[in-house]
Length: 158
Ligand code: FES
Ligand code: FES
Image (cartoon, rainbow, N blue to C red):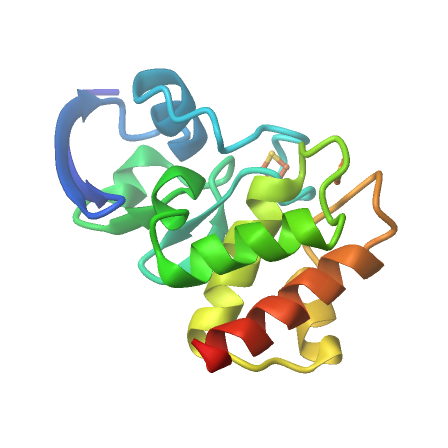
């Protein structure tokens, strides 16, 4: 397949480079751009560890092709921490013991970021639904739901 010139916005900055259109977005981010905060777990769209925000929606970057990034706004865990929602989420995850091994954490935080962007004060049920595609082997999920709920409350108070 022919290479393409890819132009997109990454964490608020314009990016341009040559790539294969069928290369996985996860490989563009982790391999080409050294943004290793985005994790690879299952590689088949089932664990949520590779979640990033593409045009405002959380996506599994292991299932997105580089060609689909053309002209898009992409936010990764590295850029998210510079936003208000992102920094509050990170604080609430740490304070609420929602991080153990940490492998799943970037994916959960990106999914939670997308939720809070649209729905700043979600119910616990809405939080559970939003993170249903993210897998955590360590925490039992309750601290994660608590942390996202707490972040929503704190953001409303800011
Ligand atoms: S690595 Fe993409 S969903 Fe698991
Ligand atoms: S904290 Fe270890 S997988 Fe979630």
